[in-house]
View 1 (tube, rainbow, N blue to C red):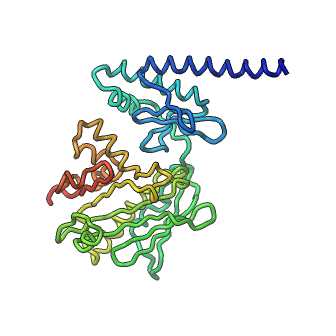
View 2: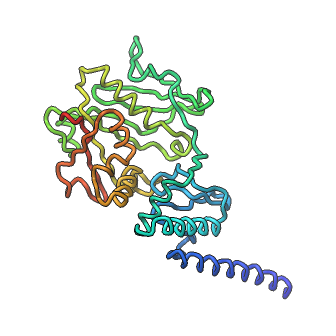
View 3: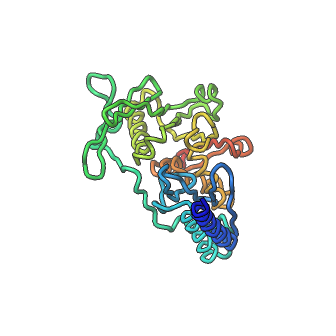
Length: 319
């Protein structure tokens, strides 16, 4: 019994010593270890995530698909994050800790090993409708050119719905794109003016899908824009209107808020509160800019730019 107790005490003492060394390292970086149900450390823009098998990866807080390190123990992850903070403050001494780390991580090599980059097998089919009507099926391929699934599009008047056929089954990806007008805005309390026709995107893609596939959102947006451009009976596309919100039910697997809301407020910190620059830093803003919607419009900053909700319009410069 004494021998067993000695062995157990040795293992406990070894862990205690390791924890003490870790705390000293974190203190040097101006950080602290936070104890809750799980012992973890969180910095301004990066977090450790467990693989449920005793290992951790360091990822971007706003977009967990951006991976910096994998295969680490919990202590190794904390030590690596402390090193990132130390290196960031040394490289950018004039910036605050959060700003320095954000800028530093933008230049760190990203692994992105966990996602399959996808694209359309036939890009020319974007926005098209079968001659016999019905749903449209767009084949998806990976980097090697192998067909891995299909996007299935159906539409009813000014609204498009998307589903995914992947791994031999149809999957509801809770993704819709509407060409929103003033009446739509009145119904959903969005600031859409008379005569404006704006793409309104409502994506709540399951995390199990976004963890595996990269590029799905862009493909659906490209297709929706092409569809409405080819079908002008629904109206001309004048721009987009983006709504980023916190919703514990809708985004329960994303920390209770949309990825784009996280991206926007992360950019606001980096850009000193510049709404236009921050808007174009989000996925939705980048896509809008690439497609000619280069004018950011916020009619009421106090009402439309809050920690829990952001509403932004991206329009053509001429509007």
